[in-house]
Image (cartoon, rainbow, N blue to C red; front, side, top):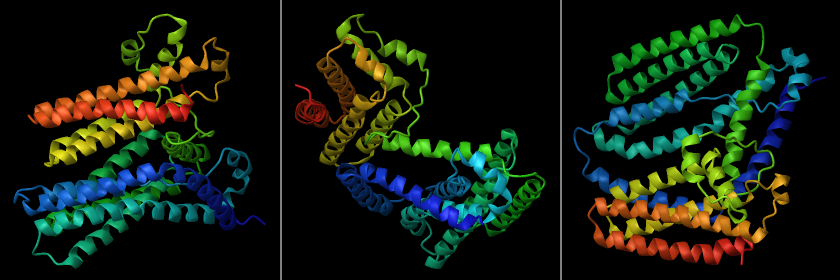
Length: 405
C-alpha cells in the first residue's frame, strides 16, 4: 500500500543528502572566514551607530517592510521530480500526508531568515522604543511566525490556480497587507494593525474558497516552481564546484556583448571572446561581480576607519577573483571546445587575462570611491594594494589552480 508520509521521508532524505554535499563547498574556509569577518565588523559598527540613533529614524518603516517581505515570500517546497508527473498522478488522492509534510518542511526551512532579522532588528527596536518591555518584541516575532504560516498556506492554495495573473494579484494584495500590518504593529498603532489583520484574514479565507473549487493538483506548476528554486541553488553551488544538474541560463544582453566582445579575429583570441561573452551572458557571473562591487563600495563609504576600509576593499577583490575563476570550468561539459585548434595554454592565459581585467576594474572603482570621499591616502593604498594583490593572487594561486605556466 502506498504510504505518502514514508515517501516524503525518503524524498526528503535524498534532498538533504544532495544539498548538504554542495553546502560543504559553498561554506568552505574562505567563505566562512569572510562571513565571520563581515558579521563581526557589521555588529561592531551597528552598536556604534545605535548610540547616536536620530530621534526621527524610520524604525517602524524599515522593520515593517522587512518583516512584511519575509512573511510574503513563502514558497512551498514539494521536492517533486519529473517522473512524478507520470507515476504519482494516479495516487493523487493519497498524497495528502506528503504535501502536509512538504508544507511543514517549507515553513521550518524558511524560519532562519526570520530569526536572523529578529535578532538583527532587536537592538534597533529597543533603542527606538526604550519604554517598551522585551515581551512586546517577542510577541511581535510570534505574530511574524503566525503570518508566515498563513502566507505559506495561502501560497499553497493559490498553486491550484493555473492563471498566473490571478496568483500575481493575490501575492500583491497579501504583500501590501503584510507590510501594513507590521508597520502599524511596530509603530504601536494597534487599532490599524487589527483592521489590516482582519483584511488579511478575509483574503486568506477567499484563497481557501477559491482553492476548494479547483478540481485537483496542478502537478506541472508544482514541478516548475520546485525545479526553478533548485536551479537557483545549483547556480550558487556552481560558483564553488562543478554541478552536473545545472541547466545554464543564457541572457541576450546584446548591448553589453557588443561592448566586451570586440576582440581581433585571430586564433589566439578565441577564448578571450568566449570567456567575455560567458561572463556577460551567463546568469551567474555578471550579477555576482556587480553585487560584490556594490557591497564592497557600501562598506568603503559607510565604515569610518580607513584601515578597515582598505582591508574590506582587498577582501572583496579576493572574493570577486575567486568567484570568477569558475569561468574556466563553465564550458567543461561542452565537447566541441576540445575540437578548437587552440592550444590549452592559450585557453588558460585567456582566463588569467580576463581575471586581471575584472580585478583591475574593481580596483579602479574602489579607488574612485576613496577620491569621492577625499581620502587620498586610502586612494593610493587601494590602487597599490589592488595591483599587488592582483599580481600575487593570479601568479600564486590562479595559475597553480588551473595548471598554467
